[in-house]
Length: 488
Ligand code: UD1
Ligand code: CA
Image (cartoon, rainbow, N blue to C red; front, side, top):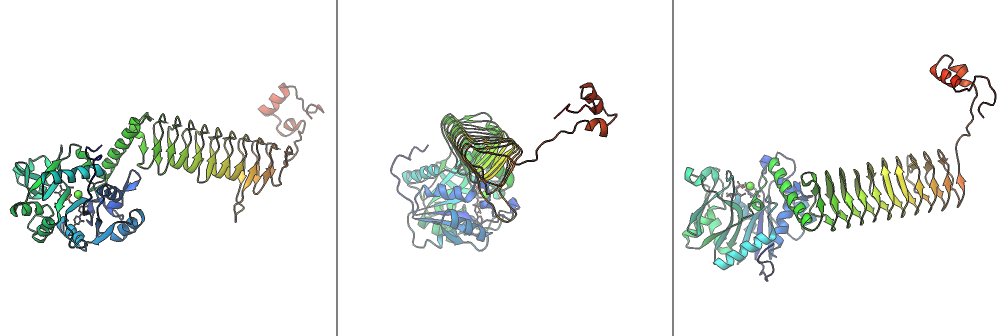
């Protein structure tokens, strides 16, 4: 993507990510930067983009709901250092808090926000490269946007930036400026430190504005430049849940576009959702209403959907998953799943195996070519290759206290509507008669049968249901009421 990404890049001194704001417009008990899109928190994208600059110091400024943010970063990005901004006094004060961890730092300090999730690392590399080429003290990432309302406007002075004026402080003429401040900057460390020391709260919000460092730098005779990012969607932030949904949709569009470029057929991009972390092979087909999440991977030629959600699922080549929900499962090459299957954690389907309609599996290892085609609960089960599990079979794995595993051997056959009361073992090449409740093991080649023997009571309908349509039908069929031996 980046024109500079092939050249060697010299790391920056520091990146400061601002994430201490109150996020009031989210109206949430969850810190704004922890809201998720594409399966990950907003702040994790900011950290990833910043990491492309290989900063010596990566600082996240936390404040509002900081316990949550700190706990999350400790998990997903333990390399970051945390600076605390006690009160949300403005973006200038946030960077002051960040700089307090960086005393004596020289060189380039990049400032970004935790709520701009589409920003890419190569955009930051281009920004820093422009900063170096132009010999700037400050370089602002800007964009021309269709609707600049709410953003700070870039007041130009030739190819330099004279100052940045916030929307609410802008004159009518300034409001007409379409070039906006993305809130992403490269600063010379000394210029930044001096500028922050000189900030005043003389603005509509009574805050310390980082943007005022620009005018300060110009007054000190330093060069302030800008780089206009054509792909302005990357600079869009998240202030409320409507914007979160919009950024999420745009992120998804970009992920889908990448996969289509790499040879994946996506029949309905509007209803297909793919997390950033998913991996797809060429010639995968995704049908409408499909959601692929977490560590899901799909092999060459497989078809997923419609109406399917896979979370942390590995799908092999040529497999088919139709109208189903699966998590933490492995589906081997050529297997077929669904419609209406529910694969729960610990499910492993062998090659060319089949799990069909209204089948639920959990901790179930199903051998190559084995079939569980209809209406089955298959929990804590090991099923050998080529076995057939009849419609309505239940693996009764729970006795109210513990859970136990049952096994069904290779090429064995379990008749429909059987209950296998765990732990029970059906050997290789064994049969279970339909309708059996199996509590004892069945040996190789044996038929296990466990059910009441059938008897037919002749003349019962004529005696007990005389005068009904059933009695008439029986009569017409020639099964007269007291003809002994009419039926065995
Ligand atoms: C800011 C810019 C504006 C720019 C816009 C781009 C200023 C004064 N304005 O406005 O020019 O167009 O971003 O999105 O900088 N934060 C703190 N502590 C604070 C205040 C904010 O950490 O005291 C953090 C927020 O969590 C957020 C970021 O700084 O991550 C930006 O703050 P926000 O209040 O959203 O700034 P904007 O009004 O959008
Ligand atoms: Ca903002």
